[in-house]
Structure formats: structure tokens, C-alpha cells
Length: 374
Length: 89
Image (cartoon, rainbow over all chains, first blue to last red):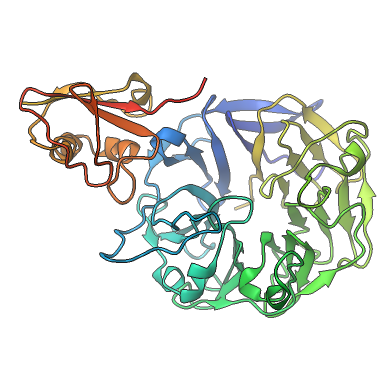
């Protein structure tokens, strides 16, 4: 086996850490049991863990551990600045104002190996925050928030727009691509001082005809980059799968994907930009695995062809849906894990050829994140 | 001075013992309390200083009316309860 790093699984009822033992993967630690852990991330620069909790009544909180999850301390959560006097926020589809208040932390990423202490945080209702002190304090990125196009973002499956993807270029920490549902993909080349909407190519079939190719109207469910070839980005979109080989300057649609091009999650091989994995579901108004069979789709040729992988996965009356942050690949490119809304968790140690069941009884799973090399 | 009490459910996140604090309006009472218990503020109020969506406040058993500016008056011997707005079954 190529990797023995741990993996952290955020669920509706706590954070579960899984580790490889002699007989396979199993839960080795539970943190925040009973609390809604919406996201977890490992920061390889200082070997710390970050976890976000959504307490509902008490709001969204951020915690950090420096001992692998044995103990946690609450750190600062992003806060929106006071809404200007007289400002009238735009309304969502459902008629609710896009408020200046933190509703969910939906992305959390270290800011690059040459930027110790820098963290980026994406939120609902769509703000991007930056911390330069490891998460103790946060500042809203105003150039993005104040862009008039930002006010055109809308909620996808949720009431408010959500910034769910942050891809910091490993070669240049000022070069960042973000993904928004719905708001497409955006890029900065100067560390967030200025932003540009990504190029053409994504398509939203469900929009009115004149808006179907509008970059800012795209419901990108997740944007990921190849770690060693970051010009290649993959998007699992509400309407299908898209790929860019020029770092979001343009996008190409991947056609003829079976059993479905719909889904939320995508993972890309860290060294082979043409290899990516998806967890398909019946498209949008249904959202369950086709024929009740849980499968993973893998392409090794940039999306020209796909293999449908099912070895070890339930193939009868299985209705597991996999959310956007609930599929991950480790640094080796061989070990993958994904978890579902019905609390099933699987790991593969051979790039998806076969899968081991870690549990079928966890709480609904929001995210799955491997620890990274330093 | 008014007395400020917090729901038991908040205590496992941030300790909020009952205290007497100065203030003639709910905003003033909360500000006085959070001045010495800064972590508790974000558990009760949102980014804009409003009462969180699913929280509720009672003043001598009467539900708070102004959830945005928290201007409801508090008698000098009043009791202010900060609770979760539970609903459903």
C-alpha cells in the first residue's frame, strides 16, 4: 500500500478519523460527537487539523488541533463586516436577502507552502475570507465581495450562493481558482486583489437559452486542480462534467458519461491530470445512484472514456448520495475514500479498482479529507 | 441591576454563568455581559449584531420584540433569559 496517512470524515454528528491498521481501515478517533461537523482539513505546513462546526442555534464555529485531533481549541470564525447604512441586499431566487452574515463555512484551504499562517475560507452566502494568522482572525476579500457580478450569484440546492472550492496553485500562491454554486469559476493572479470570472465553455441546460453559457450562471458543484499540473482543472457541474487545461480560461464539456454525468464530487490524480474520479447519480431532481447501484466513474484519458468501478460497492438497493466534499484522494494517487448521505464510507487502495467498506452506519457524511504530506 | 441568565445548552460550548449587569435595554445588558465574556457574543449574536435566527430572549417572561437592534427596555430589577428558540416535536 502506498500511503498510511489518516483520513478525517466530517459528519452530521461529529468528526470521525479513520486510520489503516493491519486488517484494513477503521475509525480510530471520534471528535465533537453529536455536533454537526461540516468540514475538516489537514494543514501540512504545521501538521494541524481544522474543523468547522455548524451549531445551528449558536452559529458556525472553527476549531483547530495541533495533536492530531486529541484536543481542540476554538479559533476565530469569519465575520462579515457591518452592512453599509442604506445598503439593500439582492434577493435570492426564494426572495430572501443575501445577508452579510456567515451561514456556512464551505471551503477551507491552506494558502500555500510559502505563506505560513495563510488560510482561505469560502462561505455561504458567498464570501471569501483570508486569515494571515492561522485562523485567529479573518478578513473578507472585498474585491470579490464588492464585484457587481457577485450579487448575481444565487443559491443552487441551498438558499444562498456558496463558495465551495479554493484551488491555490502549488507553483504560485497568488494564483487561485475558486468555485461557486452558482457563480461558476473565478480566478485571481494577484492573491485576491483582483478577480476575473472564468472563461466560456461550461453549460447550464436548465437555464433560459440566453443564459446557458453565461460563465457567472454556472452551477459548478466542485472545482479541483491537479497538484502537479495545476493548469488542468476538473469540474463536477450540475449539468455534467467539464475540464479546463488552461487554468479556467476555457472549459470543455465531457460527453457520453454513463450511468450519469450528474453528481457532486470529483477527485483528480495528484500527478496525472488526465485521471479523475466521479460518483455519478441520477440527475438533478432525483439524486440517487442509478439502479440503486453505488459506482465510481474513473477516466484515465482526460474524459474520452470512463470505467465504471463497482468492486466492493453495494449493487442492490443502495441509495447513497455523495456530496461534493465527500470524495478524496491521497498524495500517492492510489488511496481514495468516499462517504455518503446514508453514512456509508468506503476506501480503495488501488485507485478505485476495488473498495473496502469502513462503515455503513456513520451519520450522514459531509466531507472526507486525507492528511497531506508536508 | 438586571439579571442575565443563559440556556443550559450553551454552557458546554462557552461558560455563561448568571450575572447581574448594568443596562436599561437588552443591547446594553448583553454588551455589558459580553465585555467580560467575549467568546459568548458570537454564540448569541450574528455578524451584524442581531439576535441569532434561532435564539430567543425573554425579559421578565416577555419575548423580545426588536431582534435587530435589541432596544427592548429592561427594568432595573428585570430578569433577561437567553434561550434557544426550540420548535417542532
